[in-house]
Structures are given as structure tokens and as C-alpha cells.
Length: 221
Ligand code: NI
Image (cartoon, rainbow, N blue to C red; front, side, top):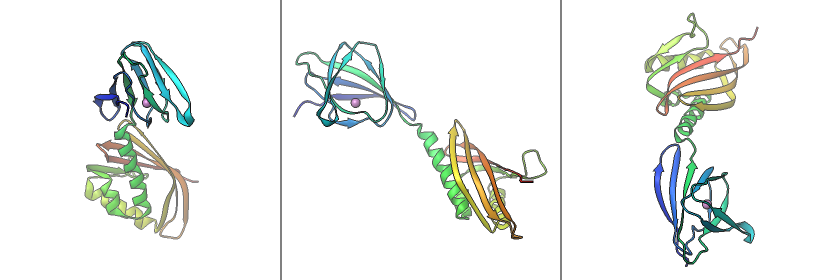
């Protein structure tokens, strides 16, 4: 068994993972597939041997301090083929933004809860201190429902107003503390009239949960 390269993790947070890989002569990483885009910063000069899929081989020239970047999906075994010189580099991975991922999951769960007419499910996506700004109302913001009880009642009122309702074609984007869910709302009002409009929710996040759900719907005239 060849010696294994030694990983030393310097940073591991929501945004970056920085690992120093130390290769004794003959050491190798073993086969791995990169799950993220990454930058390699050589800590010394030298040459690494690469085993690639389908039996292919390559070399990577290392120049101390001169970085190179690779994209997600690279698959290889990295070997220090030298029998005398240790090698090392820093691997800087841009890990997916874990916070944004969790927030996006909340948005997906929110839309699923609306489609399931699941008020508890909706409330599970809302932060302890929360508000819902409806798509209509006397105020510039639409009718504002502030606090968990008010948000719960307003959600129930949506389900009462639309005995049939489906939020379809959902697309969810997170940028910083803001989320945007766009959708096509297809349903039927209590009087039997149909509704079919595009709209969106602009969310303000508090942690992984929604502090403000600000709804917009097209008015068809
Ligand atoms: Ni690699």
C-alpha cells in the first residue's frame, strides 16, 4: 500500500474549505472526485503525477505560490512520484453556501406546505418573529399580518379564499438574507371563479427561517 497524503484542514466553514495536502515521497491521495470548484496553491515547486479515469495519466507542474483552478467533477488520484522530495499544496474549495442551501430548502418546504394546505407546515418555515405582507390591502405593503398568530390566521384565510389552489412552476433563489420564490398560482375562489396568475414571494430570512413573507401577484384586467 502506498503512503497516503496527509490532509490538514485550516478552514472549514459555510463558504470555504481550505486543506493543506502534504505528500511524503511516494504518497498519494487515493481516488477521489471533487465535489466543488477549487483552487490549488502550490507550497513548493515540483511535479505531481495524476492517475485519471480510464487508465490515463498526466502530470501537474507545481510552482510555489502560483495557483491554478479546477471545476467540480474532477476525478483522479494524485501522487507524489518523487522518491526523495516531499510536496505540498493548499486546496481552496468553494463549498456551496450552506446557509443559502438551507434557506432554499425552507422556501421549497414553504411552497410544498401551501400546496398541501398545511398551516402547521407553513408556520414551521416561519421564524419566531414573523410577518406576512399580503398581495392586496389598503397599505402600500399590502395587508400586513404581524406575529405568528396573525400569520397563521392570514394563511388560513388564503386557504378559505381559495378552496382550490396550487402554486406551480416554483423557482427559488437566495441572495444574502433575501429569498425570491416565483410561481404560477392556479386555483378557484370560493365563488367558483378561476384564477391563474404569476406571482412571487420575497422573503427576508432570519437564520434558516422566514421572518417576512412579502407576496406579489399579477392583477389580470
Ligand atoms: Ni484532487
